[in-house]
Amino acid sequence: MKAAFEAADADLLSLMVGPLYGNKPEIGVRELLQNSVDACRELQDFLQQRPEFPKPDWVDLNGDVTITLREEPEKKAGWFEIVDRGIGMTADVVRNYFLRAGASFRRSDAWRDLHETALGKARVMRSGRFGVGVLASFLLGDVVEVSTRHVEAAPDEGIAFKATVDAEEIELLRCTRLPHSSLSDGWLRVAHKDFSDIQCTYESVPRLTCNGIRVVEPRIRGPWQYYNEQTIEPLWQSQGQFLRLECPNLSVFDPDGHLPLLLQRDGLKTPRYPFHENITEEVTRDLIAFILVNAPQGPISEPLCVDAYGVWYTGFWTDPCRWLPFFCLANGSSFLDESHLGAIRDRALLLPSTKSMTTLLAGTEVNRPYNVLPFLVGEGTQEQRAWFRFALGRTFDTQFLPTHDFRPIGARMLIRKRKYLEFRQPGLIASFYWTSIKEQFANKDWVLLQSGKCPEVSSAVNFEALAKTDDEALDGLCEWYIADEPSARTTRLGKAWQELVGSPVIPFGMPDRKALFSSEFDRLHAYIEKHEAARQRLKSKTRPG
Image 1: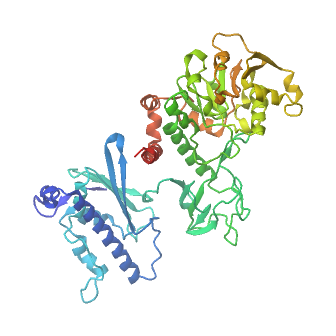
Image 2: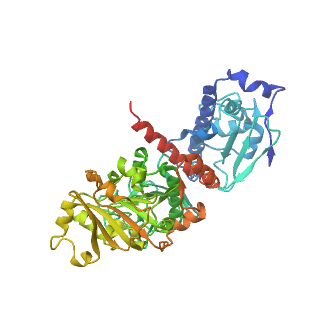
């Protein structure tokens, strides 16, 4: 269906926008707001006069009218969005009134029939009167996008169009569902044919709300157990169960009763939502966008970049983790997923904590390998012993996954002499470990231990140079020698990453990152934009002064 902007009087259109309003954008805001408020009042009157009419399937908003400002910093542009729960427009109203300057539907016979009393008195208080409000939107921008559906129209009879003020022809398109209002920060929207809307977040809200009624209370204990013993399956977890992406908190709009609730409406009949895969797909895309935006922008040897290696996506269950989400490579970083470990070759430096990356270790004279995996080992004896068995003894430990897929042929560890002597006491480290461990070097403060085969290569870490310092942060520093490519597993994240991004290596520099993954940044634009804004807000909060 075709339409166009028209002036009810000659030359009115060309004079309408700037001169009429004085080129004041705030007047454009006022005019659009008045139109929306009038539409809401008209719907209220319509429903009061027709009590038998079914309740409209309103879009979910925080109020009857909402206004949202969205910025696009890279394009130096933005959007002004106004959404209302008003009476809506028919195609006839759009063509003959909305797009015709000076032609007000609220002065038409059709409007009077709907909203006036038998004595000719209006039941609706009107803000707009002259039929020029829509043109005021061009005080705010060059393009206007409209979607509307009259209250009496069928769900698939909505109207949508996009126009500029000088458009000679405007195409009115049918839309089956009007766009939802913009979500608050931290929320995602999931589409499913059986539900009118599904919204999810990892913010602190009830675990499940259905049609505005709280069903499952906020989590108060355990990784995914709740106060009423309701169990919700995680979206996915690694084969070793070391990395788990939890199911987010949900607000579900279910007009047809598809959600399998208990009779008491205080839980689900099953631990898995009927739209589990839909949520998983949406959250995984959001996770990948998060990684692309927040991956470190420099090697871990740069002090200003160290903290970025420990930034987790909020959906992960990280309580038992003793590893950080990113690891360092020669020309970038990568997310520490099992399927990404194949990017590591030859040697890897294992840091018991990011404090181990001292100024001395960052120097070139110690031959630090480019591949660096940071961990988060506590200072307690039990954790220190577990690290020793894992890093030097090369044994499986769920605390330090996902590196269990590595098959290092040898390892060397720098350890404080007093700790080494403590560990040699009976009962602390099993005796079979010591049969494969030997001292390679020692001085009054440090001992360098070796297990397995450690090739004599000039590129090996110069632990003797490090042992000249008294820096406690180097205690437990370990180098692994990797003979072959790790037997990386295919994970849910790895599969999605391969499909959406490709290379597991994320360049340090953001310009290089966006150039290499230009199509991926475009494809994930909405998610990327959200995480860039969140990153900028965090910077503003932490900026001194």
